[in-house]
Amino acid sequence: MSHPGIDAIRSLLGDRSTRVETLEERRASLEALAGVVPSPPGVEVEPLTLAGRPAERSTPARVDGPGVVLYLHGGAYVSGSLNTHRALTGRIALAAARPVVSLDYRLAPEHPFPAAVDDAVAAAIELGEDGTPLAIAGDSAGGGLALATLVALRDSGVGVRPAAGWLISPWADLTQSGATYDTRVDTDPMLRREGLTDAAGDYLAGADPTSPLASPMLADLADLPPLRIDVGDAEVLLDDAVVTGHRVEEAGGAAQVVVWPDMIHVFPAFPADVVPEADECLTAAGAFLAHHLTT
Image 1: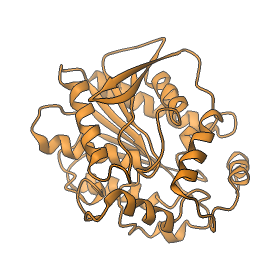
Image 2: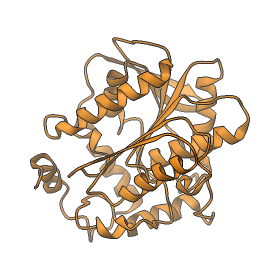
Image 3: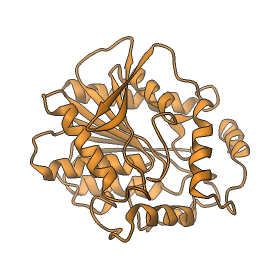
Image 4: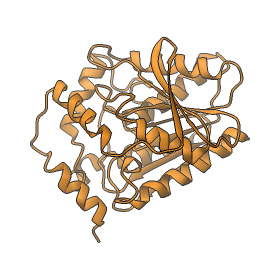
């Protein structure tokens, strides 16, 4: 059964199966989508510098408890910005009733792996070094980066241990090994194996794609904080999400994987009046983050 809101978004996106964009076009097209979903009222946005990088703090009018969420945007490690994800981070702040800090980490190919990981780890340490409860969240490549950051913090010995992680449609395996890269290719209007392989090449710049911090799904996933992973059943990254959850549980951790029928890539970012599941997901994930930041 088709979903009218998702069908409308498919129509808006058009057929991307044969579309080839330059890096500049890709960045511009993502920036152009920034105003499609307006930033929500009731959130104050404050620019700041975090670990030497531009960042924004989105603070809801009602803050219900301690802690902060570090948010890492998607864009295949080569695009995306504070601007493209401002509406989503504002909605997360409202759902969690906590401030959300979005980081403008360095992008490839100008700054290849591990620059993004280094930036995210440094930001997490700065946010959490005074004992402030911290959660890390991200979408797509930012979801993979959030997982890599949790792995890197665990192994660093710095003492900053986030309370939780939330991964939205994570790109967690840069080898593109999952079966759903093929089985969902006809239902995913946004991503293709070929485009992701190109982006992975720009990001890795010759580094091993199986490196634990490049493809954190392949890392040792023991001793991580509780994770929530949301993914659409109609997207090619479905296996990245599901396999990551399974591997966390096999390592003795807790991972709640929620597969949403009919949904496509990063669906929580869609307008709720078009895709009601977006707000359903944000509400549930906000409660998850708030619970773990409090406890």
